[in-house]
Image (cartoon, rainbow, N blue to C red):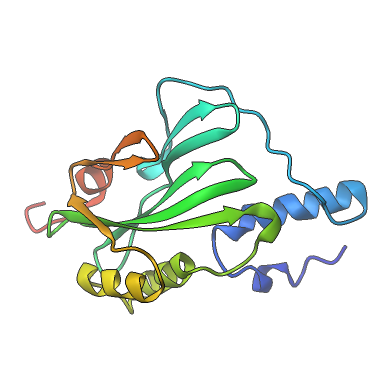
Length: 184
């Protein structure tokens, strides 16, 4: 199987794992996968902490909720993926921190399904615009999100928490540990 063209066909960082899982399934069975079978997880009352402020609560054998690793952008904004689901089906949101202004916004949701990936969504386009420096202000970002068809972005104080389908997630880590403000 020639994988040399794979890198160019993957349009977003979120699709790498889905593409890899599909390739492994195809290689093992010799044909395209017809269904997705997520690996069962062990539920826990406490979150698992990862690098760069990543957090994951495993709420059920087939459901995890959390934040992906924080990424500091050249604009000074900090971006994190917010997820709820499993490897086959998940809800994706985008959390964007403006630590200097003391606020963060949540854009989304996108309902994703491994068997339909890779596909580009509004969140993928917004994340690309943020990472390229085209979008650098939260007010402009909120307008772009609405133009993409998302409900009005949720705006919260940087050091607060957000609720993701009933799970409260503290979002203060990114600004507290990664922000290089004028007072540092």
